[in-house]
Length: 465
Ligand SMILES: CC(C)(COP(=O)(O)OP(=O)(O)OC[C@H]1O[C@@H](n2cnc3c(N)ncnc32)[C@H](O[C@H]2O[C@H](COP(=O)(O)OP(=O)(O)OP(=O)(O)O)[C@@H](O)[C@H]2O)[C@@H]1O)[C@@H](O)C(=O)NCCC(=O)NCCS
Ligand SMILES: Nc1ncnc2[nH]cnc12
Image 1 (tube, rainbow, N blue to C red):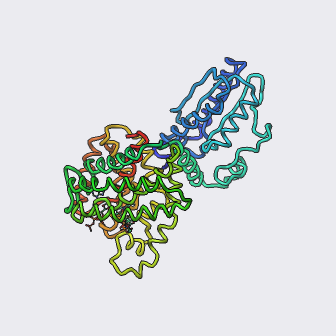
Image 2 (cartoon, rainbow, N blue to C red):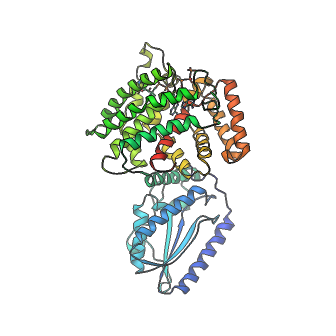
């Protein structure tokens, strides 16, 4: 997730003008609400980009939290300027003790994962000075990169803007993932969501090089019917994956994963039986199996956040990359594309994705899909191309014969979005053109399709599609 994406840079003059405007606004509120405490809430974002769609989302989520921290006080006025190019900000007038209000906002700053990005000023008509953290015995705000005094780091220019952006991205990504919760659902609901995801993905058109109801893309051995047969053959596996994980009571989640893998071997064989030997869903068997297993385990008692789901998955797959890729040179059988690419380029492929907790799906594609607008088809096409912007698709690399193809994939994705994506006829025409090019060059983005399947599955479970 890049929270600065689609953000516009502003100049120093605008920042200074905004500061003056804020100060006047505060003064006016102090006069209008002489017995209230005025709370100014803005984001603390270094650099020229102060606003973007995701920064506005982060602000809105944080605001909801701040109001929770202030719930014991009566709010008599509130006004927010979310669209300000200088960054979202707003004002509250609350009735209560100045110190108590300040302590509540400090508590938000210190305990909420997104609190560090917020700058909250408290003032009242009777107090000339703003109440500071220090005056209440708290240390000054810390730098979100190195944890030292923020003011010193800023003054001395200790960090690059890039490292600041990285830190902000991390804070926002974790925070957003904590906001997405998969509630406890029945085995049937989970399995249905997996089946839905498989069928939605193959029904989507136009996809570059992939199979859909209109075209077989760059796959001469598959049609949409092969995918329907393949999908239906997996229903029992999904049920089993859920059952073994729901019943798992040990602490070592790699044991649960090992059991799952044995089911996966059988599911792959069943898929091959249903498709007459064609690999339609090998990646999806692996990824959806892990997701179902982690959800079944994580929702035994109640809901699980996407952040916690990721933690479960990384515990399940902690040894996966080392285990699967050790001694490849001794292997008698022909190496798979994934193994061969690890040996040649050190690309960890789908195993690496799993071991990292599927970051493309959970950090990027899921929040993107949940926020996307338009018809189901438009939302899924945009999500597919979003995934294409950062995936290391080993299926594509295998077809192209080199990882250099990833640079082209990034560019295709960027051009698609520059043209307006699925919302414009230019974007759709471009996808159709890409499909023709993929077929001519015998390219396919099977890994990207698998990531879309995982994303739709999760979105379905959180009611986002
Ligand atoms: C770990 C396993 C999934 C398998 O590993 P393996 O080494 O056998 O496979 P990989 O080559 O690593 O590829 C795995 C499939 O994952 C998809 N994928 C690729 N990149 C990513 C990514 N970044 N994130 C997620 N998923 C990704 C991709 O699947 C799609 O492509 C399929 C078509 O591929 P292919 O068979 O090569 O067919 P074609 O392109 O048509 O080539 P030709 O036929 O023309 O030559 C399509 O089905 C999509 O699903 C990769 O294929 C797992 O199987 C495993 O654990 N294996 C170890 C043994 C085992 O325990 N097996 C039991 C199963 S749990
Ligand atoms: N629609 C599709 N076409 C080709 N390979 C895929 N793997 C997963 N979905 C696919």
